[in-house]
Length: 167
Length: 160
Image (cartoon, rainbow over all chains, first blue to last red; front, side, top):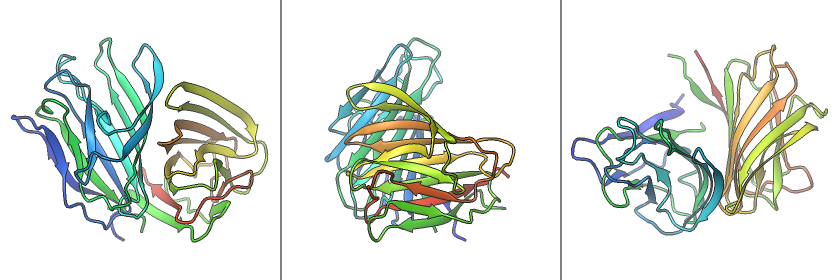
């Protein structure tokens, strides 16, 4: 039987940092994609952006979040706050954790996705976010990019792209 | 090495249906994961019934965000297990059914149910039965249907 949950590609950021993490030439042979990543920022940014097929257009989402002192819900009509990263001033050696699940990424419908994101740093600031997102584009996804808004992801940030097959 | 994560069955709808069934589920896994993506004819429930149990043996707690507010609600003694809603825009539901094949504990499910145009939600549902789950009916109660092209995939996950 073909492997159901298979690593497609991985990235570990090196000493120079990276302004983006890019997965290209994603084969259309799986059913779903699962992107699992852990980030820390070189500046005070606590969010980063997401692109599909190098596009920032046609993203929208609805989020529920908690930060340790309150909870709320927001909507967004773009992709610029789509995943969390631990800011540079927070407790050292701590990185965020994110998982994005994209079912039927190669199909002909709009691409809905589910995101879970957290960072905890034994301080007064923390984020936990659940997101319902959609890329209103019927193209198959062949590229997934995480984009830092202003600086870089630091060394030891990681990202793993898995393919999930239903047969 | 035994495979940890295996597809058991998948259904892609060729026409609208209000009921999708996974039957004869083997007891050889530890947990199950059900992945749905698709659209509904209207805003309809994504509700589970196990082993043909239509009794008042289900309960749920829900945490959700509408985009303007966050809230929580619950339901007890339900006749089906609510783990999400399906909306008319493309949406995704992922349900984890832990320890489904044991015969000593009640069965808990957790789900992430997402519609970017409507709601982001996390559900927990309890089926008060110690029976091993061998059948899952997914029902759109209230007369609605899951639309053409909607896909339902059941995976088995092994702990050893």
